[in-house]
Length: 416
Image (cartoon, rainbow, N blue to C red; front, side, top):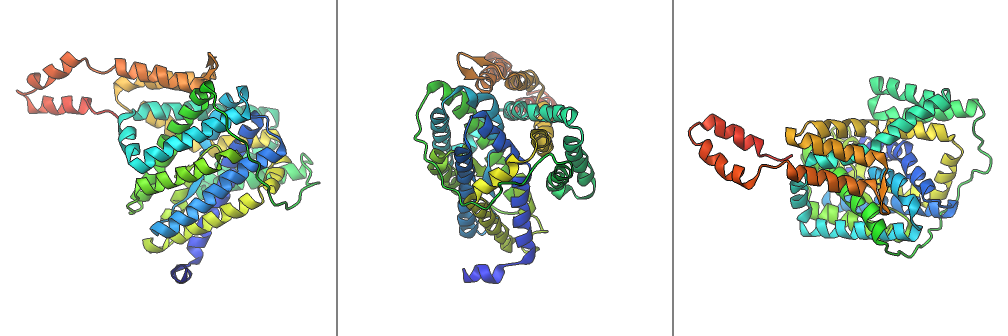
């Protein structure tokens, strides 16, 4: 702690606070929509938020101090988006059981080091398409919200677009502030009944339904690992750190598993908000940027303690504003996912687009949701597009005469 005191800095503190604020400005709206889809009351909704915030905070503080890296932990926003289309048909205890199994599986994959090996095998275009299919409906819903409430929702969108030009890092925060101001000025919300309340978490004993595991648990595991933890590790590596994926992914997933009975669907390494804390703006000395991770973790713990008040504050905002805010917050992720979907090798295009379309459709077959079937169909199409064994064995013989042709053949065999 004495070293932490000596290495404390105002810039790292500001970076950690901004990272926390960004998390609760836009992505948090997606979590609240997921709790609404689950039909939860105010108490269970607050407990869900408590689990996510406390888990993110505690694991972020411990891992940042232990590794001396700015480890930013957050909830799985794509995972929350996935739940909108899948959680409504199950008992909440069944959903909790699926959350628990997904987190336990993530823990095993992280601790054993299998995570990196599996991610290398799963086609990147397929996982990107799955992510795009989950998030795209939010952007579409945001567009519809602007037509329903052009003043409030439209202000959110305009503020976001303007802020991205002049203050991109704070675009979502400024969009929230602008929408809240217009909401207050138009009398669309009231602050009556708002108070600072300490949250009491509620335990939900998990039950295990095979359909819930397939519809919720399997897609949640894949999206959280490939769409959240993998980019989170990448951000740290790009900043010059050497993260141990066994410690970070395994540790965060274990904390996630402990807290799922209180409602939290999944926590993971952050990517977008992590970039705020890992750059030179946090501190010129890379060795002192871990302070930002500690500050962000403390902010998450405070948010968890007062989760009920946080939920109440969002509850007074119009639904159209929340939809627009979720749309603009997820827009960069959708763009990235769509780009990765179509930038892979040609044989991955049809499997990836099929995965995207089936996921976004929201279909339910035999009680199992669209994300699972998208993975099945996309994976089958991907496998069917691979060269046959005879073609693979002939290729080296055909390319021995021309080194250039051999190089092309090797490039064509690379999977994303």
